[in-house]
Length: 513
Image (cartoon, rainbow, N blue to C red; front, top):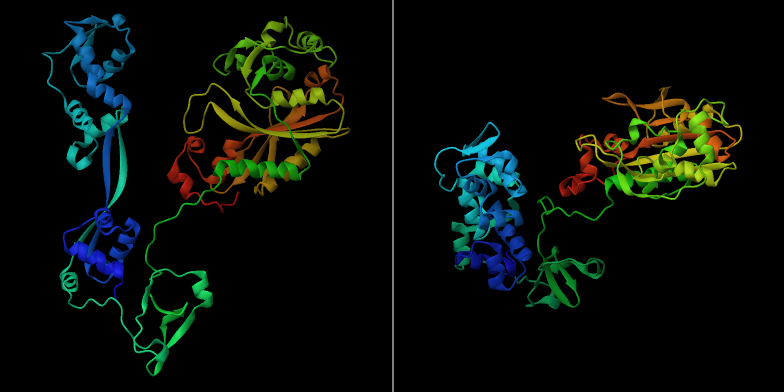
């Protein structure tokens, strides 16, 4: 039994229509309805349904510019004459073409001078391809030069897009039906007197009201049939539905996996009685370095590690911090010696850690008890690769109270990691500039063994004494992104910050964090 839509679509296909969009426009139907009808016809062997993915290439803005003005290597070649010293290449656009000029064998570098090789070459394949794409997008089959496509794509001159295509062909059995041989739109059953000679309507959509209030099981002839339903005084024949057929996947909106992990860690800290604190991204070197007893000539302050701004900050009374650095006054320490300079402390930076926010909070709250944490982004000059990015998140916690000890710190850390789902935790001695004693917590991961997750310790007197903090301060921190890589099974840290739609769709919202 074919529905009315099935018959319309079958008739259109028999008349030469082959794709759902053209059929939908002709029949004034939704294209989704056409595809559904065509799938039903295909299951019955009345048509053949061919599905494919079409890849089209088009010019980027940069590619369009080069298609109109010429590739950098072509323009550089034109400007060379018989040769030109490399020192005269001032135009960045020409410098871009230098590598490609050599790769294509159009020129060579000799004694600091770039010289053309032979006569001016004819337009290359990639140049012709740019001209072809200038007229509009084209499929890979139309272009048919995979190597040049890959080169242009790697240079960011062309972009690709994928689209699904359907192609319908009528079968011999379908032709018979289309010409009236065996098509049955709706059977007119022999029913009880109430439905005698009344035509049953095709039912294409079930509603909750119909399911609840419809009368299922209608007497037909001498028996009963579940193939019909009475609803609203009319008789309907539900269309068969195959639940085993593949359907289009639906991708609901959901929270980013990395954000879910951050929220999960925040919940753990709040459950443990901590208060969340926040601070400015731009910090003075005083709070980011000096307040933490980090010497002003420490390598971490150098440009390769820190983003410095061309601005200066106001800093609080630095007398005690200066004395601590120079001679260790107030902490039975020798300090770092030398001369501490306030102009260095005033330099503003993008915070390199969240500890600068922590010590500032402690300076404002020197009386116990203090139990605070922060989860925030920090910035460092790092080369981007699979395990490093110039910006990442840190979680940091502190506890300041009377008589707290190093043992309390280990207990807090073990409880935190247990709530994170790490059952086996151990500690090994470590070194950090502003804590003593210090440890590095490690957790056991199946397949990886023991993995270090952060650092912890008790703030040194040199850190706390200048701010009048008289009680022990337990502190720890960890890189959130590293935990995310372990929890989400990632090998590339950049996935956490890139909008990779496929990865976001495939990461289940129910994953155990």
